[in-house]
Amino acid sequence: MAYKNLLIDIENGIALVTINRPDKLNALNIETIAELSEALGSLDKDTSVNVLIITGSGEKAFVAGADISEFTNFNPEQGKKMSADGHVKLFDKMEKMTKPVIAAVNGFALGGGLELAMSAHIRIASDNAKLGLPEVSLGVIPGYGGTQRLPQLVGKGRAAEMIFTAQMISAADAEKYGLVNRVVAQADLITTCKELAGKILKNSPTAISHAIVSLNAAFTDGVNGFHIEIEEFGKCFDSGDFKEGTAAFLEKRKPDFKGN
Ligand code: COA
Image (cartoon, rainbow, N blue to C red; front, top):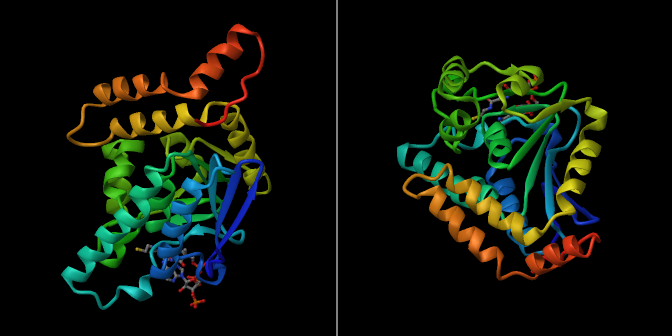
């Protein structure tokens, strides 16, 4: 399917998804959120894809936030709906993908942009990236998971400072905080993410999908993550990948995982 605000390039098991509104610093308008939601659904089912990389178009921005022009006149009900819809359609959906999602943070990741990066499983940043949750400077709070996922990644104190001051932090500080896994030169960002994806692609897609469920359970209220781990561990034993992985080990050869 052709998208107005997304570019999707699939090669060697990796889908590179580029948010393509560079003149608006890739701000997430309703249309882009809908397209991303649709694209995630279809890439999750696409058997030719096992890892996703999400990035922004141009050299300046990953995503500079939700599109401010769309919500300036909202009332409380509309604001609540905007937030709830975003969670379901995009942010939670990305976190619950059955395939790893790597955010290639290539510039400003602000507001909904940082929230999008935090919904990915792994973040790699370019050295020019600036990350922040500036919502309180606009009179709102982060509404796409920022108040929850930021403290999970950096701790409550640092999250509070970032949210209350609305200030951006540098890529170097984001790495120090654990908000991104590493920082590379902008020219190397996509190659680095593809190399990381390549390491993931060597492993069992089935096992990785169970690992995602189990990891997510560590951050889901009301569920016992250890119990989920036991369940997901057990399910692996039913898979062709498990039989192949263990047989390959014993036969001293590389496994040929089919993702079943
Ligand atoms: N929503 C809508 N449009 C946005 C946007 C957003 N979140 N972020 C940037 N844009 C638009 C600008 O309005 C501008 O459009 P225009 O050329 O039609 O006027 C264009 O993108 C370029 O942005 P500009 O502000 O001119 O670039 P800059 O280099 O001077 O500043 C930022 C870059 C990121 C510091 C600045 O754009 C900014 O503060 N954006 C908003 C960040 C934010 O508050 N996000 C949270 C939203 S909840």
